[in-house]
Image 1 (spheres, rainbow, N blue to C red):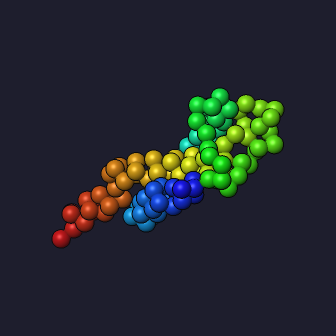
Image 2: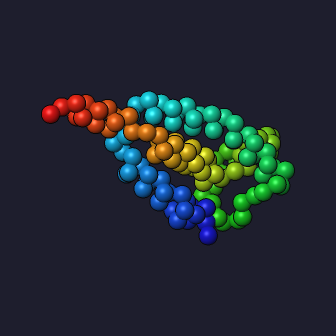
Image 3: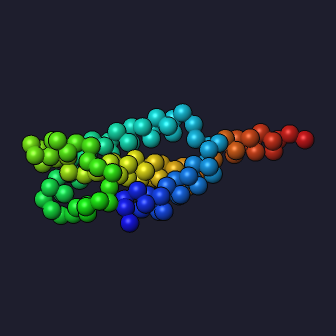
Length: 122
């Protein structure tokens, strides 16, 4: 199984379902928080994942990925160039799933406000 096949089977379907279910609850502040989280995830996870692969803690088999976006840097740097495109996609997918699952479990304030307004009317 390739890394993209993994995403297609396991992570992206859940992402699509949650996005469709929550599409009316996603507001600008949620998107801003998601963008900040994705930035933090990239800044902290990129060097750590690359270094773990460099050390041989884990790796990616031959022919299972689309390629390595910073492979030209791998000979000079231990923290860049050792992970494939799909791993960077995984950073975004997982951060997005965390945000969507959190939003799913948070109370829906807008529907509660409309119910409270409607409760006082005859």
